[in-house]
Image (cartoon, rainbow, N blue to C red; front, side):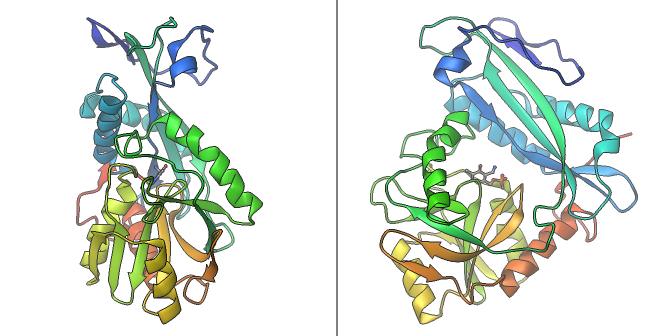
Length: 323
Ligand code: PMP
């Protein structure tokens, strides 16, 4: 679907996957006016297909567009575009448990020119790819590197938007995490380098027995849809759950005195990943006993059961494909 200044959204079409031809002076290549989303379609027990919370992705896409001075795509249009692609590719939605069809809606400037200003033309597209289970050999805790040198996002920046530039900015720190033998980077706040924000592509949750806390939305971390869903699911399961501030010291001390029992990360790709160990320039420690925790695995199953239709969709999150 294209957007042109003065004309709005036009020319929706479903076309076979193919390379795009890009002008060397395309503004996106120079100024990174590009945003995206990620969501999944799951096969349901009766053979039908449903996407998980596409309205939430559509709304976050609008918020990202506002922050990047791009036009907002109507929520209904976003969902209709995703539905059209999934309907076309229905046979690519796997029929096994955690497997899914991953959907990637995105939008970028198509105007040609070298002036730094919001573009007057954009292209919105959705592409899809089947996704296997994230942990084919069983859920395995990840190790994380606390990035004290680099920050992902600063107050007033684009951290709360799902903008391509945020990911470009995070690559060096992710490479450092790998160099230190860790799987993922964990970001701290930009000002004090003290408060836990999020993981590379996932939000974090801290489990203190029956009390569960996730870092509050400061404006510099991504408001994850999995994060928001787990706030509800954890409450449904009787946990005391909320948002708060968690510092590196809280994490380290909670671990040392045993009050912090589990830490996990959550996002569309892996649903929930236990965090097993932490490394930083100051200290290294194991989280809990370093294994996948009970609360983590219980929440993971509860969410996946809703997504795969194994348990009732009490929150109305599943969007069935009509027809
Ligand atoms: N934080 C970042 C930086 C991400 O890229 C993602 C993945 N979209 C998340 C958190 C988790 O968000 P969601 O639950 O909506 O996938």
